[in-house]
Length: 234
Ligand code: BV8
Image 1: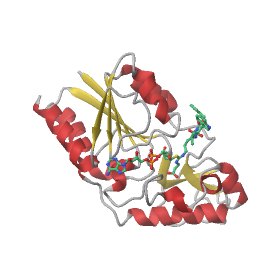
Image 2: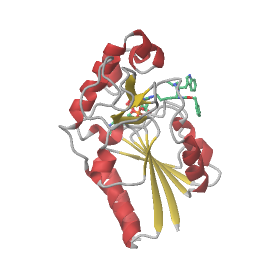
Image 3: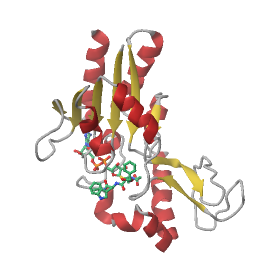
Image 4: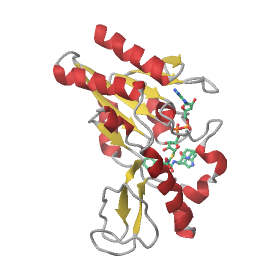
C-alpha cells in the first residue's frame, strides 16, 4: 500500500485563474501582508481585511477546478475503486474549494477556508458564501464577532496533529505549486526526508539547493496528470 501525502499551494490553482501570492501578478504585490494576513492587521482595520476576503470569496464563483485538481481527485477515486493500491492525503495551504469541487474528499485545509467564518465570541465556524463585515452578526450567538476562518501569520495552522501523523506514515511526499516560503508547511519536506521519497512539481525552479529528491518543472495542469496517469498505469 503506497501512502502519498500531497501538499498544494497557490500554484495549483493558478491555471484556474486564481492569483498566487508571490508571482508576477501576486496578491501580495498590491497589499501589505502585515495589514491583511495578521490578527494585528484585522484588529487595526477589520473592514479592510473583510473587504479583501469578500473579494476573494466572490471570485471563487467565477473559477473552476483545473486538470491538476481533477488528476488528484481521480487518484483518490482510483484508490476507492481498488484500481490503485494506495492512500492519498491532500494537505492544502490554499483557502479555495477547488480540490473539493474537483471531487477530492480527504483534504486538510491547514490555513483555513475562504468559504467559512469563525466567531471569536462563541467559536462557531459557519459556512459562508457571501460578504462579511465587522457588524455582521454571528448566526449562532448573534454577536458582531465574525472573522474569516483563515490562519494568519503568527496563528497556529489547523490540523497539525493529523498532518504530523500523515507525514510520519507516508512513503512519498509531493509538493505542488508552492514557493516554500511559509512555515511550517515549507518544512514538511525536511520532516519526511528520512522515510519518504520527495517530489516537487512547480512552474519554475526555486532558488538555492533543493531539499526534494526530484523536481518536475512545468504547469501543474500538464505535469500532475502525467504523474497520476503513470502511477495508475503501474
Ligand atoms: C506559525 C492565509 C506557529 C490565507 C497564509 C522565520 C522563519 C520561519 C518561520 C517564521 C519566521 N517568522 C515567522 C515565521 C512563521 C510564519 C512564516 O512562515 N513566515 C514566513 C513569511 C517566513 N508562519 C506562520 O506564522 C504560520 N504559523 O508558524 O505558527 C507554529 C509553527 C509550527 C507549528 C505550529 C504553530 C502561519 C502561516 C499561515 C499564513 N497564512 N495564508 C490566505 O490569505 O491565503 S500564507 C500564504 O502564503 C498561503 O497560505 C501559503 O501558505 C503561503 C505560501 O504561498 P504559496 O502557496 O507557496 O504561493 P506562492 O505564491 O508563494 O507560490 C506559488 C508557487 O506556485 C510558486 O513557486 C510558483 O512558481 C508556482 N506556480 C505558479 N503557477 C504555477 C505554479 N506551479 C505549477 N503550475 C502553475 N501553473
